[in-house]
Length: 111
Length: 113
Image (spheres, each protein chain N blue to C red):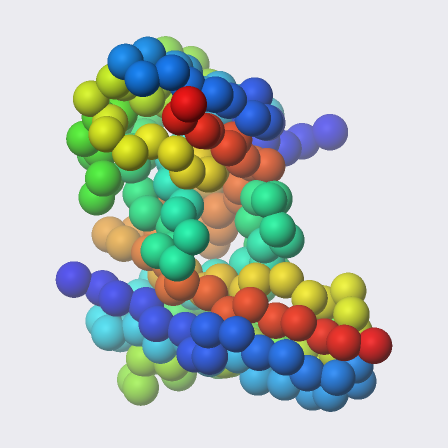
């Protein structure tokens, strides 16, 4: 059964630092991988979706990479800002439909 | 405005009560999903539906029921058989072709009194 792991569970950085969040999955036969952001008490906001045929996707200061063969994805955040403070979740589809989630990385960016 | 709405935002349940959480989408998505989020446990799938009048159990379906009478609506009922229902409930939807990207509603926080 597919399992998704995110490391680290929490991360604190000063404003302006570049950072990398990690996501690993046990079954490399995935259709895509999705990164989400969640603010406290709120729903999930989709940040990036990488199709299985892609190596990376970029949106503004965010860059997500995918290495299916090693079962890993990274989310790179450039020039972090206090507004980036949130929990970041990665997820992969199970049987092409519902998502299996990691437990998330909670990021705190201090000014 | 296209999106997913959930109501209510906060819900309180007494022991032995059934309560229903609403989820509506106007994105014309085929599939809809219910997830439960507990601190330290991540999101877990309760039920999902790919077509009207059909739905499948997820990993933690016991104590929950759903219906899909309309494409845009997927209500979740938390029954008295659910022993520990206090959690944050999230509804999502997606197409069943193309990117399969899932979009989420704002969530309902259910507390048992």
